[in-house]
Amino acid sequence: MTTQQPEPRGLARTLLGRYTEYTKSLAPIFLLCSLLFTFSLAMGYILGDNMSGAALQDLLGTFPDISNMSIIELFGFVAANNTIKSLLFMLGGLLGGVLPLFFVVFNGFFIGWVTYSLGSSVGLGFVVAGLMPHGVFEIPAILLAMSMGVSLGYAALNSLRGAGSLWGEARTALGFFLTRVLPLLVLAAVIEVTITPLLLSLLGYI
Image (tube, rainbow, N blue to C red; front, side, top):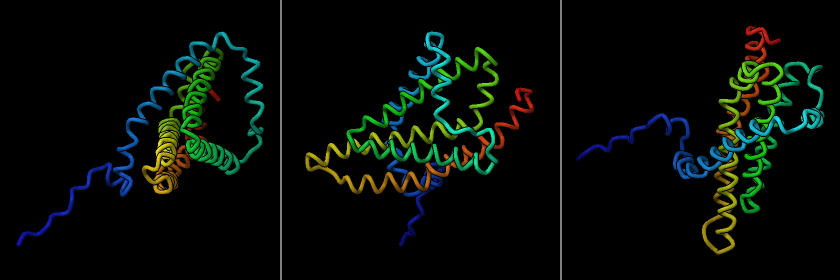
């Protein structure tokens, strides 16, 4: 009688658990979202010289004043803003998957535009130091959420043809968002309000 050996657990399976196969199924969509984000980022930077700085100020003016926020309030604002928008646009994918792709393109273009605008005035070093520490967690998390949104759109279209389970797909996506994507967004917010200002200060930017 042979004893069944436990299945080897790689790093991906350890981190993703029961969502490992679901994450693998998102790989082609994640690649598409990453390419769209990179392209729109480049276009935002390239076209930055043709866009008015006043428009950037008007857009930033729609955000609340964070200068007087405590670190706890700032963390709450950043974490809630990223989480709510990511979740809403992910669920918006149920309308055919268009809204998540729009969110990817808009954010890529906006970051490219901000990079050009701030880079021209205070230098690219400031932009990189200000975006990189939390961006390495935040951007992949948002792209992953948008990939799930596109997958939800595909599942919704399939359900109209009587194929697949939309509820099953939505339940998996929501569970993955709450247990894997949300912690990354929270971690990014922590880094953004603590490590990023410290790094900018050490580099002499603030």
